[in-house]
Amino acid sequence: MSQNPTETDGDLYAIIFENERVRVLEYRDTPGTRTHEHHHGDSLMVTLSDFQREITVAGTTRPVELAAHQVQWLPAQNHVGHNVGTTDTHVLFVELK
Image (tube, rainbow, N blue to C red; front, side):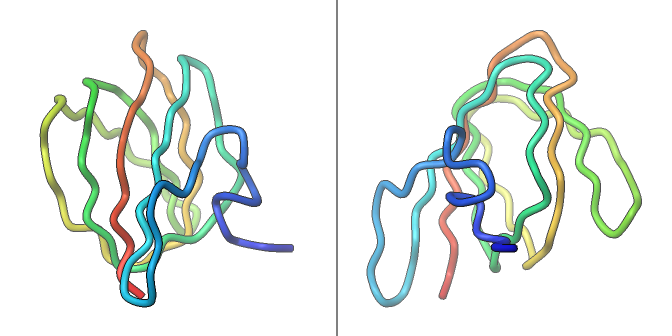
């Protein structure tokens, strides 16, 4: 099965730019939404909304609470995300190829 988030959760992820060096994904969800396991390459994550999530990586779940307008580096990983807050999630991922 594919680990590409645009295939595992095509209703949540959209490719908004892609070339030979980067791919930019837009992600949106609502409270209670849980993704399927998927893979992100090394990425910058840009938060466009405040949100609370649980992220499960390699069987370990941890809480994540972020404010809008933050930029974070994310090393390549497979994960499952779950919106456990009361607000929609809106994020951009700039994945390096």
